[in-house]
Length: 211
Length: 211
DNA sequence: AATTACAGAGAACAGTTGTTAACTGCATGG
DNA sequence: CCATGCAGTTAACAACTGTTCTCTGTAATT
Image (tube, rainbow over all chains, first blue to last red; front, side, top):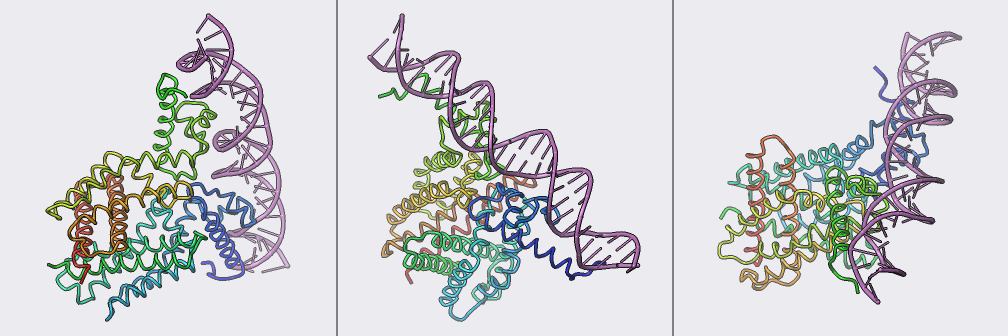
């Protein structure tokens, strides 16, 4: 068995990460299906053939980017929808948390929003799988809440899906306001306010579902 | 002034439409940002340079496709959310209408879902503008409903946006079930059921918003 | 100290791309 | 009926693409 660390492995990981980073930058104004492997290696400053040491294809690299963008996000999602005393405050914190994440990792958010329905099947599937995991986790958290007493499993999952979609839509909206160099202060605040109200409306629907 | 019709103009429109149709087919498994102009002309059986007689670039063609996909959809949207006696039946009809539209024009729906967050700015903008129009129209219809008495203009618009996003998400979901050649009968029925329940939950939230 | 494994370089390939220029044929308007 | 406008063609261009094969240097193993 080969050592998991060492000068050799470390350098390889470093190059691999450089490829991922460069790809993410290039994907800011194009889709994955038009991303060329030479384009990526050129940006890193490495020979085109080096690409194959890390990825079979750009689609393969895309799948790795999905893992990077969404893989470490599960704890954050769980915490976001965890039951709380004050439901209004939970929503406010959720919106702030999303805004913060988008500001910290705009390229990742853009990538997921773009490739969720993009032209590369394996990447679409990888994103769908991650979002399904999110929905399952959100469902678990919702089930803990006393408000969910009497809900069927299917209804919990449909609400969880609604929440996940809404979160992604909100993140994408924040991203758009980040891109517009106009009056970001006021507009971003209004986007946050609208997103919060939409979540609030869904929560209202949730509380009165069993009538 | 040139005649609006005539053998000459008609033939030109025919070629133009052939380019749009061919592009739509090619876009079924790639994104617009990777669509080549030669690729499109080759599919039509016309010289590459002929492309320039109709479009400045593939991005330009994309904008035309947005108009084709969404331009004629406004009356349908209005009718879908128009006030009705039985709100439950309206939702059922809306879901059926969406399912029918996706079945009739899958490539158009795929294109819009894919390019809404895609890598081509002018196309993104065109889609955003159309969806904003939809939201405005939905808002108008919602305002007519007695349920909306006492609602602020901003809240009406935020609800309209929620509905529009939900419709597109539902359409995209139906599209996915169409692509999967597995058991489409049962799965498609469940997708419709889930989508209907999500809309119902939003409607419940709407009725209890002013509490 | 000698051998092996392997990340990355280099060169070459056949095929593709967008764009330009000059052309041809034919429907149209005078 | 003839001159013009213009949709579509042909040919050529430099630049780019993914992939293959061969080679090199050096870390890791023995």
